[in-house]
Image (tube, rainbow, N blue to C red; front, side, top):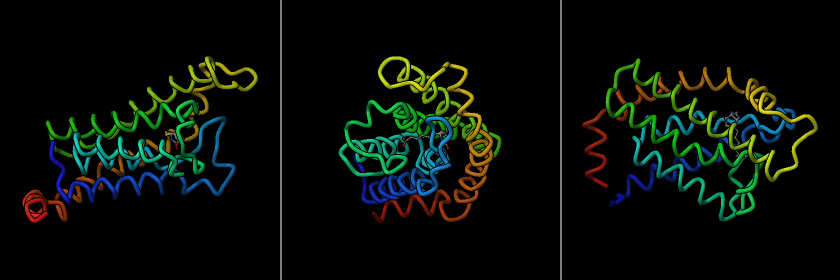
Length: 196
Ligand SMILES: O=C(O)CCCC[C@@H]1SC[C@@H]2NC(=O)N[C@@H]21
């Protein structure tokens, strides 16, 4: 598996976008519902899958996770460091890898607009399923769960970012398809890769 200069540049760009998306709301303390910060990470993870494809998109999310784990404050609320692994929201961070991969895979099979939209929504669903279940078990098994914490409450917390994430997933689909047909049109993108 050989990564070219253009691949590394795109991976770096998406790591930066994820860091911005994680923290653009961190200055507003009210942007945390229950234990869940409201962020733009899902949007950028979906975009990584749509624009970079399954393999490079997943690599970008792995690099994002690794850079955060070694200490860069690029997770939500400027979190970073190996201790993040026990944070209840770490499942969402892991899920971004699957999100980007699955989104890319679906689009690689069929690159019509309905496919872009379906891929984005499936990616978002994977993000929510993995992240919320991880969060539930984290609170039940090792983190200090708030009083009266239940599986239903974990999902109720997710109701706050859900409408925003559905809208942004659809926006990501339209944006990625638009980019694909304009700046990233296949021939241009290929020649960009050849130059790199
Ligand atoms: O600690 C982190 O960096 C992960 C935060 C995860 C937040 C999740 S992602 C899906 C959902 N949408 C949001 O806006 N927040 C949660």
